[in-house]
Image (cartoon, rainbow, N blue to C red):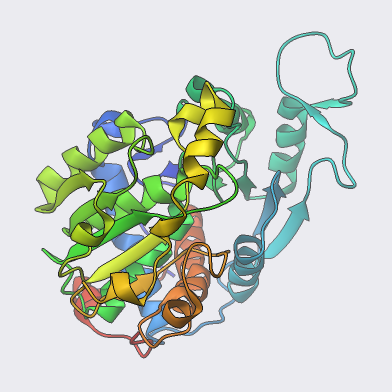
Length: 378
């Protein structure tokens, strides 16, 4: 077996690949640096190879590996797909749910006189000794913008870990979902993603959801060279640092980024409509006002009338989705919906990420793979 040349490192997001998970040469404030681009391209080709059944689904390449999956927040697809991905590579997944059968963890450097019995540094240090990688899900606080923007808690985990840490959704990023979605789009379009029109539309929700998925979705689509429009009501902009990174990435990929409050206008001639709910940044300062504003935009639900403006677009959503709130049944159950394909590709994408992390692939996937249509064809 030939070990690939990529060095195993933390995966916080696809433009911040490094030993400490911090930004690379261009980093958070710009497009992906060379390490992030190399990892992204390799993993995308590998995920497509798995999805197209061009390589076996089950191997024993990771039979000597263990991964600890730490879920600070609930999960269905991420937990199931990550356990299955590890299993199909021959690895052993160990699932830990902090606060449910484990001690509560302390995070700061104050004397531990409260209810937490263990500090995060020891907890992660121990799991690092038990495993060859960590997968961590840790959502945004929703109350401290700077802490969330800086990924302070996830960074503390990466700092405490002696093995690679894979982000299973953090405050600002969801790289596993982004890779799976990129593979689905690339497969569906037979590799012809350049200059296609992609609409990321805000959708109603009773809760102020985090922005990790829309942030990663935006970067994913521009990375594929697509012309991306973010449609959202006034007051629901994505963070300016994310928009800056997307704009920088678009310059390199040949794509573009625009923002509008006209949902129907955004969907004119669109090839992809990706719906996602997220809370406005105003929730950090005035959550009651943000909630009132969010409730006033129930009409942003994706329905057949909205989809009629498109170029026979496919519909995408990362799941879970609230039927009749985010999207109507007729759209979600229609032939153009790819939401279940997205969930399937989570397994393929995460196997690729594990192989990259552990250096297990026998050879580099051919560059031409991204232009071959897999058996999953929308």
